[in-house]
Image (cartoon, rainbow over all chains, first blue to last red):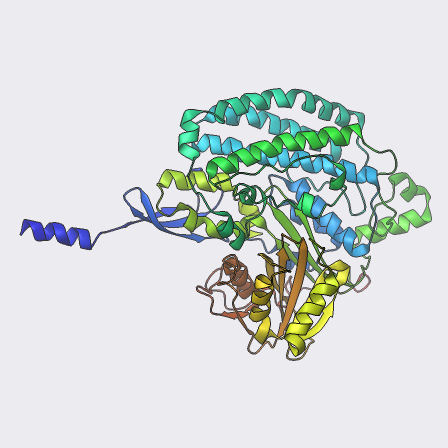
Length: 399
Length: 168
């Protein structure tokens, strides 16, 4: 009698259903995962997404091109300058505008600062999820300093709306150069300290190695890009494969991992921060002289002085503000290496003042679908860690 | 290894699929094929298995709506790429709005799953063979496809934003 009860229990094993999210402090964003748990082991998972879907693609169909830049800010809000630049470059490609070298170098500096801040947040949070809050508090101070630099360039901090179609809105002022130089001087020291806190920390390594691993074949099939793909050992980086904004001028390497687990993702991001610093250093040293905007009066705002004193400038100013300029017909796909991977813009223009169709290829959206497979058979705590090391950003996920 | 040119891809695909390729184009240097929807999956599979072209990555799937094109109102756009050869290829299919059906490519690329769900969610394109074709970003109860052009962004009855001088 006793025996049969035991047998039945084994056959009809009961699983617990656990709702992780939509709002949960450990998921760092609005994600819901319905987990089927056997004790603390995850048997199955299903994600629900779309909680902060804001219909950017629909809104973009009614906005003039310069008003779409603030929408891109809100995709991956940890590195909004990269999104802004990606959008500007897409429109510039459609218009066939050539951007002066100086503007491209300025853009590279801003994009690499954004990459550093994006990776810093991600890696600091991986540390938090393993129980190490120290690195997080130290690194957020440095993210703050990067935001100070943005503030001096464009006036905004988080959703930057930095740059314009055709170049940069203004030249870097002396304060910006001073702040970037100071950052380049002081940050490596602080960051080395952060590295030494975690990279060879036994507790951290034990927690992250083999957690949420994925093979290179699977990652490619799932459409992984960026640090998550490079952690599996595939050296695909848009900056090298299809250089944009003068990235071919810079000397840097692509860090890769081997196993595609949380530790590799962490280490790839760490490596990329060092490489980004190298790129910024090179861009600062070789900053070309010249104009910081291209000759596109239809899109680039004339100087305020000219607007007051010059009829033509006033007309252009008016037309830009009212969003009245038509763009050529065309079909463009442009990709940049965002914080999370290949951020693509598919733009279909029918010649009007706003895009006929705009689609964002959001890296988070595409690789997050592999998440159930990556956490299957692992502990719940690993699932949290895997999510934070994948750097899934809700804004980018839901667009 | 010799570089694979756009001409090489166009000639190879045309030689193999012939009449299934409705038109080819190269806007901004990106090879674009408009193909018969019935053979889209075969073409992607062939590109994937081709010993030279070696398409190994599905970059993106999205839709578009052209209300004025009779019987081909809905458009599905695929971007695939070969990381080995550093080439990107765009494939487009036009589908009638009454019955927008196309074969799913989820068994070729696992990542197509959510991309196709998103396209279904916004344009109502039916991907046959998809394991779990349901809405992804919008609520399940929604009974229309919001990115189709018949749904204006703002309330169509509003008059305060009408501005004939600026074409809005």
